[in-house]
Image (tube, rainbow, N blue to C red; front, side, top):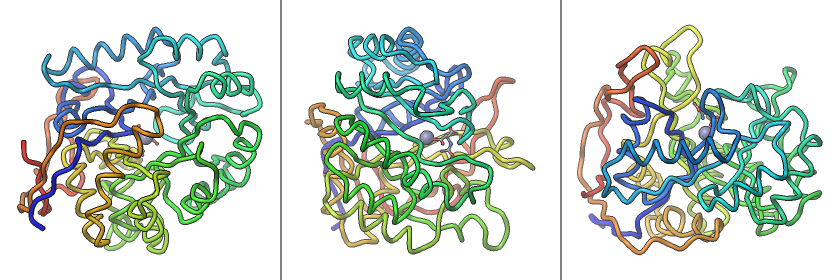
Length: 348
Ligand code: NCD
Ligand code: ZN
């Protein structure tokens, strides 16, 4: 098969940043995806409906008027997010989920939730009104090994949470382990998961063998090969509980190539092509459309996209850097697999 046509995909987990940085990266997502769930971990975080609607407008203003891209906004859950705020969010029509970052888990997560008991009423309200909770599934206690944090989150936080709120829709974001895939598969229909391209294509050797490779560092961190295989099996299984979420998370070259490098991999320049490579490796290109274009929309209760996109088998080289910006001004970004040759290309 040298050509692949599927319904236009959506990205159910995306970091777009803000200001000039956002203007630099948003077109890569808009080119491939019709919609994206936009993460709220800005500084300051997107904690209110008002902030989310203003952010949505800034994203739309940064794109050409005819791009057709729909940013689906999220609220950042804090210890103080009220039931009233999530009701306002839902009735705005533009806010599609609330994101839980355990405090300290990842980039810009210091305003995150310190104790789920503090937001119990808010979670009950979300279950009632049908607003999904998206979780960064890592338990951040200092004594838990970084490679065990996802499993600890399942055992100590996620399992009790879904038992307490069985009607709450939950997306376990960017899962990285066999444990997570098994847990999602064996739970009811209100729990689903997103999977990134890097976790389908690479294990932790890519990050750590032959030197430290900061452009393979993201959170949750890449795991061992047996976990990658379990994720690939889940993504290509045809189960509607697993769908596309790139977690594309741009940082400047300097911020990544540093003594304390930032977590986050920018994959939006080639996202659907990377997923196509992973599915092809598994001999499951026929399962890509469900994962990329159907199951996420179904879970969120949104219509499936009618438009189609086509990928062709064609070698192309990923650029070494792309234009980007930080607070000081222009600064380059190193895209995922910079300098490497990819074998699928989206036709525009
Ligand atoms: C994300 C970021 O940079 O905002 N980084 C990452 O490694 N994935 C935050 C996140 O989703 O954890
Ligand atoms: Zn993320």
